[in-house]
Image 1: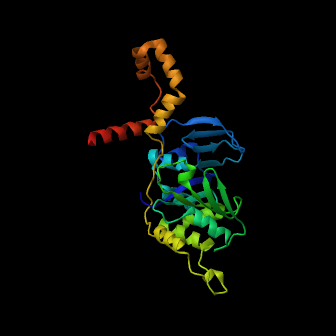
Image 2 (image 1 turned 45 degrees about the vertical axis):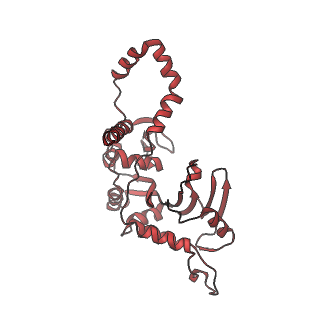
Image 3 (image 1 turned 90 degrees about the vertical axis):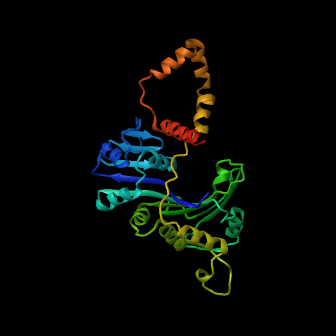
Length: 304
């Protein structure tokens, strides 16, 4: 699996757009949005697959919020065009803002040893513009953080494979920059490839280094693994959309484990023919995530 850089969270506010405008911008008119009661001063929230559009606040602001899974849904069911969203914000200064942007490098090829990184952090073999750092160990692996969650830049490096509970021996270390307010805007406005933009921020704030005689620690040479990380990230010129992580395994797990008892009882009452008749005559609009799975599975079977 190749190393990639992804957008893993995005929040945009606007004083000049309506909910329908954001749906149009995302290219997601055909998905089944659900309306919930809002929060943070917003009366309502339109929701689909971890994408929320908060609206009806006294000041007229509309807030688009996408988590990591929401970004994957945007890439799969919408346009996945972040640069157009960024440009729209730049074209409307004062009326639109990027309030959060998470950018992450995924190491799938063994560039980083998370245990070594934790040890080097404890031994202060790094230079940083942050005052705070932490090494965290737990049942889902270990992680290193630099900075504060409340600051405009926060760096987190962690074992994504361990967090997901993957036991197939796969290597997946995530280096994640959480950018807020001005720093988020600056990253979106920066020119150049996504790899060079990511490395520019990373090297400016944190470097793991080899100890030497120089009195200026910022001039110490990079640790080999940090140099390899920077080299790999810098070589990424284009954004590759990872797409949704919703798959056949998750779908069948929901059908049989969560809804299985209800389905079994319905078949007992209606019979299999009655169950299928009711299922096929339902008037609910198809969900794109299931349509995508069917399309993918049929394509795979056709190629066998």
